[in-house]
Amino acid sequence: MSDLLTQAEYQAIAQSLDFPRTAFIDGKYRAGRGARFATINPATGKDLVEISGCNADDVDFAVGKAREAFEQGHWSKLHPSDRKDVLIRLCKLITRNRRELAVMESLDSGKPILDCETIDVPETIHCIKWHAEAADKIYDQTSPTGDDAISMIVREPIGVVGAVLPWNFPLMMLAWKIGPALAAGCSVIVKPAEQTSLTALRIAELAHEAGVPRGVLQVLPGDGPSVGEPLGRHMDVDMVSFTGSTETGRRFLHYAADSNLKKIVLECGGKNPAVVFDDAENLDHVAEHVVNAAFWNAGQNCSAASRLIVHKSVKAALIERIEARLRDWKTGDPLDPATHIGALIDAEHCAKVRSFLETGDKGEGPYVSPVLYHVSKDDPKAIEEIFGPVLCVIEAASNDEAIEIANQTNYGLAASVFTANTRQAIRAARDIRAGTVTVNCYGEGDIATPFGGYKQSGFGGRDNGIHAHDQFTELKTIWVDLSDPASGDNIG
Image (tube, rainbow, N blue to C red):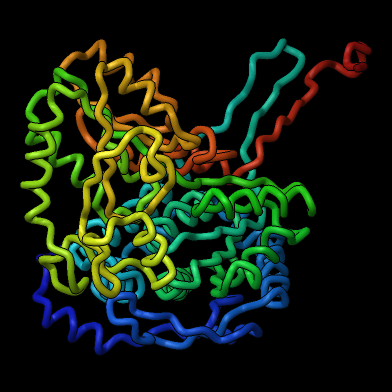
């Protein structure tokens, strides 16, 4: 990734963008039959473009095209190496258009251009490329048998997949789903969040240019009742992969139960702890990670460490360092490369976040600056997922109590532990009920490590790594009888 531009240069790119305006169905942009809706720049409140939304008729048409493409086998039965080559071409096209995509993402979501340029777009490319390269390197298996049989255990693409995306990481979550799903040979229908449809539509266009056949990757913008629910209830959709709120995730389980029992994979909310023990070393390092964990993407992150559970003996020193580091985090115009915290996604979400804030911390317009609240473990701020730049600090009298508090949540997506004792670190990582536990750092692992949650944070599978491929496939056993038919030993 080349060096960052100036704010004026980013603004010039923004003025030159040609935004998608319709759905991408069956290999081309096509007007939806649903209501038109405006996609709004969260930072300014002004319309970026009006989009032709989709409805249940569009979903039915797109599913038909996806099924047709899958059964024809131009993608599903293509040699994995050939699918890899197409997806690598897509990565090259994304790289060629990376500045356009970064600015479009920033305008559409309110994310800082700093993050779009240095994290979101590069990670999108890396994710799709990783799964592309894995496509022809995943071996199937044989199981132990006697001499008179051979058994093959093979993966087959699951079929037509509905991918329902959140608004907080539009490009990255798109890549997390289409990377493994397309590499596996599935046909994918993407329902982007209605707040952030633009980059998904542009990626679909680039994918078609790269050689992804018609009907294999389609994008249907629209709201949940118009597009999400029809996808979830459709009898010819084999799977839905959803990232978003736990409340909406529950609905997809109901949709599956009421229709064809399609496979459902959910990655939902989190109220993630950062646990700091009394022996934590280098509190400056700890503060850096805690600030990033709590306030990156304005806290609009399902794996944000929004609960800091800190031993009383190091609390004061750590808070001093956190507050000092936060002074370097600028809140403001997302197209300013010096901005760390951009605009919250929309007025409705701003109101929700502000409902948790004290009067002096409300902020103005679409912006909320980082705040720390010292709370008890039972305070609503420490229990509910705020999804904003709010860090709840909870004091623990002992390391054991810190772990106990960490597990006092309905969620279990991610956690961090800071300690100088290796045995204590491993024991804490084992004891915390979360899908990812990092030690002496904040993060989600990398593209090779599975990501997903325990309890109400996840259901049905994992993103990233080989495990992501597995969730988009069916496992089949093929049993071949090799016995001599003349011997009569092959009966049964």
